Picture 1: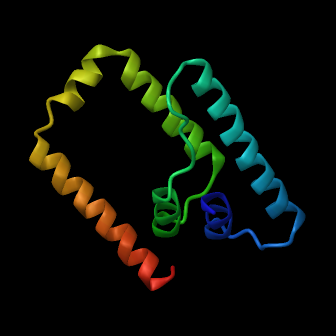
Picture 2 (picture 1 turned 180 degrees about the horizontal axis):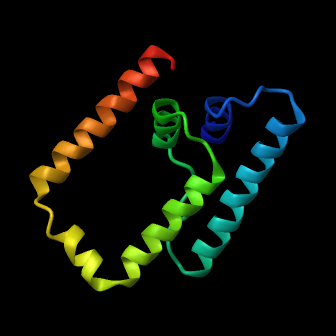
Length: 113
């Protein structure tokens, strides 16, 4: 469901070869991720519904943006000073930011953008 909705939010037309390849790639990615999660004895991590709202809100569905976010998250996790900065952000600030983000995504979904 999430993979199909993400593909549609990305502007891919259902029934086309590109759409089918995107769905197959999404399922393959979830499968590989779940396999490695099982090897590490942790719960699998699959697609998130929030991504659909973010794509609809920002109109950015490029793989390069996802790769860039992944690289930044990896670097933030590796370098302790950066992680310490994010840890030092007060909980009310994070709560306000999260509420704003999810409210925007909800409104975007309701409007059908």
